[in-house]
Length: 546
Image 1 (cartoon, one colour):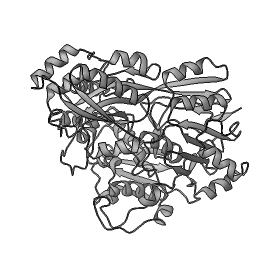
Image 2 (cartoon, rainbow, N blue to C red):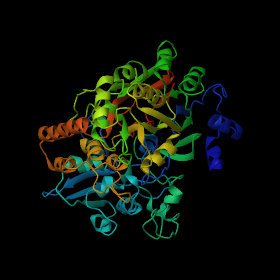
Image 3 (spheres, one colour):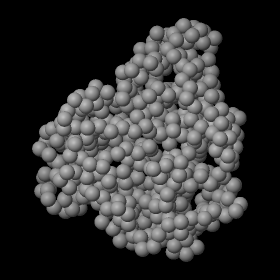
Image 4 (cartoon, rainbow, N blue to C red):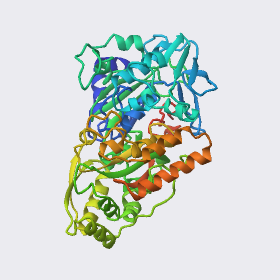
């Protein structure tokens, strides 16, 4: 697809465009073009660009800028959603049927009209693909057999969605703001469908365009995806047919830059306009420059370590608690996440309904040793931890390795890029995992579900929550989590999530460490740069350059 990218650039020669995209040297070019925004970004977690499959934080930002949804999070009030493709919607008195009226005259980037049939197809393909994020809409009773009846177009501008139970409407609408509910261009996707033999990867005799959409684009958002080269570049180009406010920049280039120091140097040299993954030390340097600035926002993302219950030593509750006392949260907070996070030990991020402000664990070697002795491991044990090679994760992993050792636990770190680590984690082949989890939609159930539910703990289980990934059966917690979905009184519902967080704190194979504060450093020539509350609300269309 490089040829189409070069054709669209015009102001750059092919060689200059390639240098702009792929050079790893921070000084490969003097300054970014006036109509192009360049961001330094560590996006090695991207596995697929298909919104029916994408389940990584970096991909969420790309799809958030390139695909449209029926409804989208209201950035002015994240407790609400606003219409995106939907002009209006109604909810039946029994809270079972949601009817959406689409805005008139909308088009995909391909030029094809957006109809309710496209919405229905998008729901159907997500359910029948049955990839990791499918459960977000599948939890409303959708299956491959009934999705065509439950999510359907009644005419070109009307889409109806029938759920299986009378859930709190805010929960349903919040779920429809998730990436998996993005609307794809049915006509375009069907041109790229491949016939397959049904297998564990595909349940039907075709791939619903998944093979093509992994690296291509069929959306209607403010930007079009022009190119993704793993660990090199993501290129977005303005969609001139977008129905909303037109993006200020003609193109946005995400340059893969893993090291914080390289991002800072490139920013200082004018090689990039925005740096997205700076360490506390490099952020300090930015604040001293009169040409650079920074912005930040608390995110709905928590960082945690988890213990796979397939490991017999990690399957003991006393070990769970011991390891939580072998983490130096204070030191991590004061150094490794200074300015980019806050110590936070509960699964709901601050700002979410029912978020619990409780950080009971501190580094306590004596307490940890006592608990390990109770577990029958007075001399400790050996274990591995899979770690994405990116800061601050690497630094936190090394800190944990040192404090674990003080308690007699020998921790071996297994580094890898995001794709490698996630693939192993999702196959339940790890011992300990360290990573982040961002809310799929701005509702407390997003995190409660993944930490507290696991309906089928077998390797063949389809609902692959974090509890499932760690082979943990949460027991009665699952019922409590499900019950909260039907509580319409916000105060009572919030109290239910507080109780669940207390239980996860006390007895679970999860040690939550901190909540992310996302920080972006940028040239003062950049205007309109803001970070949203979730990973898929970092919108680039309002950004300009003076």
